[in-house]
Image (cartoon, rainbow, N blue to C red):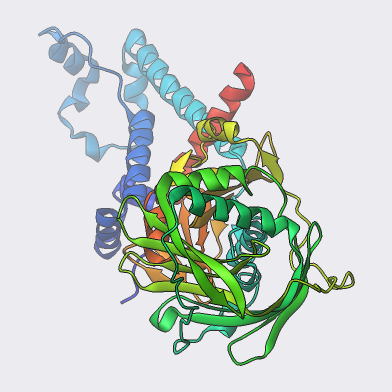
Length: 502
């Protein structure tokens, strides 16, 4: 049986309040009200409005005992006739004492004035209500992936292949059977904290100073969510790299120019500080990657005591040759690096290649702006699921319609996109996850999308599903109320008062 909606009952609410419905329609309304708080609120408003229009003047002092005798004498011979036998005889009104007649007329006039004023005010409020409807937001994931890929490209320890892979069709990267291979661990003596830190700082510096060309391979995720891809790249420091990304079957998915990381706090000192505060750095020497001598650096979580990440760093240049990320259960969730590399004769990137990311129109905000944006109703936090806010951007400074926040702990990166509007429908390729209360999509970077109040949230991360759902769980999931007639009237009156008061 088709379920009754608020729209179906729009014409029945007033009749229900007036008690003028047939039994079947009344049952429909009652059943709907039992499960719809919004309609119950509107019915209550209509009841109050009806009482205001039909209320009677409060009773005065008790009538004297001789009043009935006086009324009988005024009625004369017709006093014994029932009133319902003479509904159209209006002379009785004229026979009433002049004072009573005047009082009745005054009461009727007051009720008419109240009704007219109420209807007028309600009409003005309804007409003055804001007509602006929140814009429909189509699938936000493609735009979020583009910006996220651009953000990862600015992080020196992020894989350039992971950055580029976030920009392509994720279904083309699906590879459930791909193997998560990696170079052999280093066999030399264990690195001290200072030595491991120095090697990682050198790798951060090399991301902006070392040119190279070669081929990279990536496998990420687990089970049915596993993805794989490869990339040819020619990179020049200060400019960027010309890349060609291919899927697991070798088919080219995209070609273009990936901008080089900039020397900003997010790219060097702050990133290393976050990493060093959450992870103990150690490692070993005497490793080999694509025929080059390397040092292996490990990051072990202080919180869990487990290996979280591993980098193989070229001894000669400091370039990260390979890297792995691990889940809390110890399994690898990302393995990416060079299968062939040349740092002695790097090829200059092709300037004619189109950029993989479009022009950046967003306005960068200082991190100190976060409390102000939070006071304005945005879900902007300094910390989110153990990650620190490292980048804050919006489409405008004064009255933004969207806010973009990037969080990191030096390893995992999460981007939160908060946009005013209403989600147009279920995003393509996504499935609703009841536990997360969001639409989820797997890929080289996982995405969650949902509606909360008058905003659409999109979260994207290079971490695993647990990292994604933890962040999603700490963001708002408010219901979106349906607009009502009385709500529109109240909004209009509020707007009038605001304009008058200023």
